[in-house]
Length: 279
Image 1 (cartoon, rainbow, N blue to C red):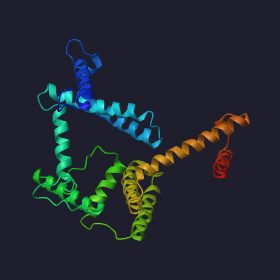
Image 2 (spheres, one colour; image 1 turned 30 degrees about the vertical axis):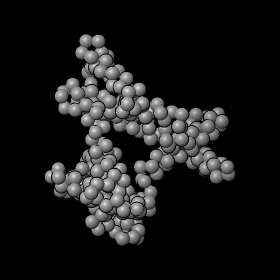
Image 3 (cartoon, one colour; image 1 turned 60 degrees about the vertical axis):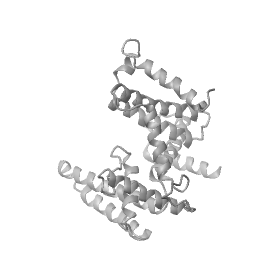
Image 4 (cartoon, rainbow, N blue to C red; image 1 turned 120 degrees about the vertical axis):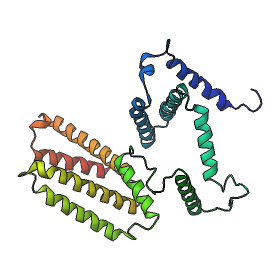
């Protein structure tokens, strides 16, 4: 191996070459040749979630494969950009290396930086200050300017709340946060009671109030140190597991599940819960 060349350099090049061949105008894959920046985005999001799912399930045998799929998305974007003369994979690597060294002056000090940041809190404060400086250089003066609108809504709510909290726009303790949740529930119910008589008029009002309620619940989760997206994923998994138990009970009864009354299904649900607690 030539001096100065790393094993990683040799590993990434075959992937870049494969991507070039997939996009070759004459011999490439028809599907890959049809793609553009916008059409790839849904696949990028899907691959990111599959990485998260592998970690959530502690499926570390599958994680390298899922990470490879996610890396391929990055390579795909870089190939598209290279074809249009905008940037290539090396540009992306240079950008992230520059950003990481710039945002970690305590690890990569210069003559003008302080290397004495020893606590995680001081590091975070420095990181935030550097990011704010970067936003100002980009003429993004709002604290909220660079929060992606395409983030899952719950994640974006948390990011918004964390940003404004940094300038003191936040409740100091949990009590008013919980009160706000109750207030928003009341406002949802106030609008919802009109749905039967004037559904077209009040549906959008209910949607608006439900949005406020979900934002307040996300804020409550933040104050409790809970990641709401993760908590909801766990709740989904728990519900799915228990409902599969309900289906098993229904099958054992000899009747199809839709032949059961709600009371019978509730009884199965309680039985499944008790079985889980007994384990």
